[in-house]
Length: 334
Ligand SMILES: NC(=O)c1ccc[n+]([C@@H]2O[C@H](COP(=O)([O-])OP(=O)(O)OC[C@H]3O[C@@H](n4cnc5c(N)ncnc54)[C@H](OP(=O)(O)O)[C@@H]3O)[C@@H](O)[C@H]2O)c1
Image 1 (cartoon, rainbow, N blue to C red):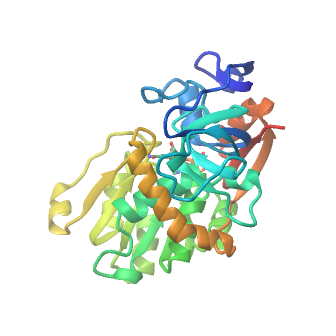
Image 2 (cartoon, rainbow, N blue to C red; image 1 turned 90 degrees about the vertical axis):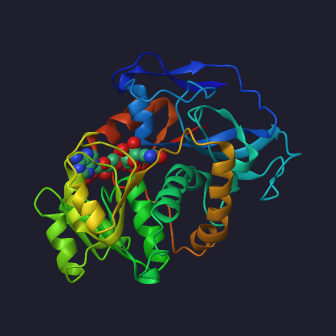
C-alpha cells in the first residue's frame, strides 16, 4: 500500500510517499480501506520529533480516517453493528496517513448520514478530544449553573476550536472564543460563538468578564497554557474549570494558588492518544448517542478548510504550520 512516512524529523518536506506492507488487524481490530485522512496539529508535532507514538502504535502519522471496512475481527464488542463493507470513520493511535489502516472496532463509528467520507475523516480526533475534555473532564453543564454554564474556547478557529464551539452551542451553552485575526473571529461567531475576541488586539479576561456581568466563565478549553494560565484563572467564575489540551505558549506559568483555593477553581487537562481503547470506546458511545444526531440534522457540521491529495501531505502540513486555515485540513487517497 502507499503511505506517508516521516523520513526524518524536520520540515514538512520530510514527509515521503512510500510503499509499506498493509497492516494486519489484531483481535478486536478491523482493516479499513482509507478514502481520506484528517490532519491534526499533533501530526505536525510528531513530524518535528516532539511527539512520539505511544508503544505499539504505527510510526506512520495520522490519528483519524474515514473509509470502508475491508476485513477484521467483528466477533467482539460491536456497539454500532458495523459490518464488512460499511463506511466508517475511526480514531487511531497512528497509521492514518495510508491507503489501509488497522484499528479497534470500538473506535470506529458509522459515517453520519449525509456526510461524505472526506467530511467524516475530519471528525474523530477533535470530536473525541472535545467531548472528553469539555464535557467529561471540564463537566460543562454539570456544575451549579447547569445548562446556563458558559465556555471560553482558546484558539476558536483551530480544528479543535470549531468543534468545541459547535458542540457547546448545540447543547445550549453560551460560548466565547479567541482567535488571532478578525477574519477568524467572524468565522467563530458564524459557528455560534456569542463573541470572538482577537487576542492580538483585545484582552479576553476583560471582555469575558464584561459579558458575564463580572462573574467569569465556567469552563475554559485551552491549548496555549504558559502565561495564559494566570489570566485564565482571573477569567473563570467561582468553581470554574480550566482544561488544558496543549502548551503552544509554553508548559510553565505562575499560578496564584490562593486564588485556586478561595474561588474553588480546578486546573486539569489530558492527552487523548495514549488513553486505553476502553476509554476511547466509552467516548465513541457518548458521541454516537449525543452528537451523531446533531451532525445528521446539520446542527453540527465538519468545517473543512482544504483538501489535498495524500501525495501533497507536505503542503498540508505547511498550511497548518502557517495557521492560515480555519477548521480542518484533509488528505485524500484515490
Ligand atoms: N490533548 C489532546 O488530546 C489533544 C488532541 C488533539 C489536539 N490537541 C492540541 O490542540 C491544539 C489544536 O489542534 P488542531 O489540530 O486543532 O490544530 P490547529 O488547527 O493547527 O490549531 C492550532 C491553533 O492554535 C492557535 N494558537 C497557536 N499559538 C497560539 C497562541 N500563542 N495563542 C493563542 N492561540 C494560538 C492558532 O490560532 P491563531 O492562528 O489564531 O493564533 C490555531 O488556531 C494543538 O496544540 C494540538 O496539539 C490536543
